[in-house]
Length: 256
Length: 179
Image (cartoon, rainbow over all chains, first blue to last red; front, side, top):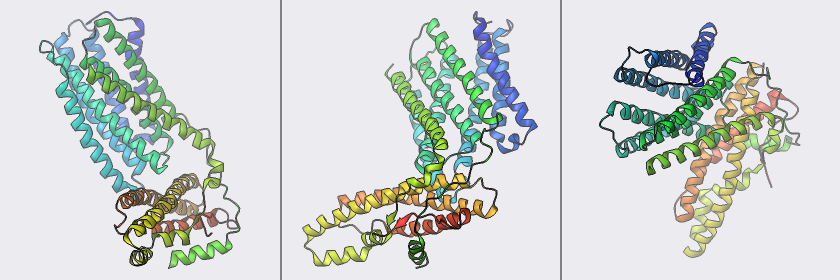
């Protein structure tokens, strides 16, 4: 074990990932796996990756250097899956509406480019630790991934709010959980990567990260697997108006 | 350290906005029944007149340059007000259309989908038109400001009326009015 941990630490590391595996299993048994393949893959690989990391942390035979190598591999796979998942959320929110899908793609690409530049700048100005380069590199990679992902998700939220679009319950839950996780993790990794925190400070940040992730997995569980209370929307009541004259006038305008 | 502070503040602002969006979604679901009352009828003829480039040309020919700029700015401000209302109406219609898209009747679902698509187009064009109007406010001698939005608004009227008829044949939905 790299360092001694409390029971709460072990719980917060293992429980959300066990829950995520349950979500993946229940998605695999239902139609949700086909509806949200990127999220299914993310849930599966993220949970397996974290279990591997946990095992590397507690097994005495795994050296610190190997632990960080596993962390790097896990970060790279998880990071790639996160971008695929953002694309899935985007296509679920805007993909079915031709009128905004193209504009949305243009805006999201522009936002993505700006975010990559911002992340590169942030990484360039971050302090380097040459002695533990593999550790500070992992922190920087995390900061970069979370900066881009949280920015892209914020763009999706802003666009859908502007257009008044209400994504379906599972898509909203996925985006909400993912956005909360990305924002909190961005803040904690930014502090980790750019300041010289004492060990106790890092432990606090780790607890914040893990507790947030636990809450986010519960959000995913709720939005993806708990059925909505309202089975079907009631018919939208339309206003009573003396519209016959106006209808004729408007139809004339439409057909002109 | 400064970089860390900037990133933490950015993350906090993003989080606040996202949580705000989640809360407003919950409120929207609860307030779904009163949606159609939020639509403000628009005087299409007045809008059409304001957006007509021939009117601008006529005024340009008849008025001295300084007076034309003054009048055109007034007309552009009025046009912006119309476009803002049209954009807000479009957002309400998106929500109405999305709410209607869960109906059992296939015709209603199709009409709702068309309504949402048209409303989104209008919302997009409203943003672009507003941008052009504000640019035209800075340079009042520039050309047309909002001609495309009128066409989209008329299309949207057709979609909304079709959805209104399918849902309640006796009471079509109005999103336009004349003065």
